[in-house]
Amino acid sequence: MATLKVSNSPGALVEAGEAVLSAASSIDTKPVKAKLKAFADAHKLFKSLQGAVAAAENALASHRSTVAEADVDQDDAVFDLANKLVADGFERARPFKGLSTHSPSKLAELGYTKEAKEATALAKKVIASKKCGKPSKDAAKRLLKASAAVVKALEPLSKWDAVYRAALTRRDAVAQQWATTLASLRRASIAAADDGHKHIYRALFESTATPVKKKGAKKGKPTA
Image (cartoon, rainbow, N blue to C red):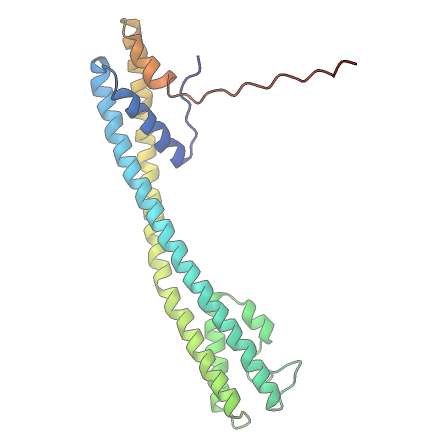
């Protein structure tokens, strides 16, 4: 009969642990009481830490999304400024000539932090330039505001990245304890079976196994 096998994914560990503990709750487990408690404690801790990882990951993803959205506004402001500068007589092919070493498209392709820095410098030059009219200066002010929003959105990222990595480290450290206590419980269940308590191993490690899918019978050729 198939027995419980667990992959290395955190989700699989949580699912398997829940199945084992659920099965244990409906049978007499006195012969393996100590080993079962050790596993239950390890599982509870692992599940909690996995929850912390998921929460940190979600928070990190949310902040990354906020940064990406702010960057879209910054890119839009870069191209809007380029168009306004053309109206002021700057070259259509190189509207940032003399103001930035980057073209509008190259500036928008820079990493978040570098683009914000370069865009801020560009905007300040436009605002100070006597060659630029009010529409260009207004566009530069919008770019300054958009770049500031990117910088502000970036601030929590390093914090949440550290939180996420720390949560991963704690969870992975407990994963070994989880696996060890499950192996110990399995061995104790086998020993209990030798002493006549076969129901324990069957319940914990056989009833919780993923059913093997049977291959469908080959279809024969239709008869004439």
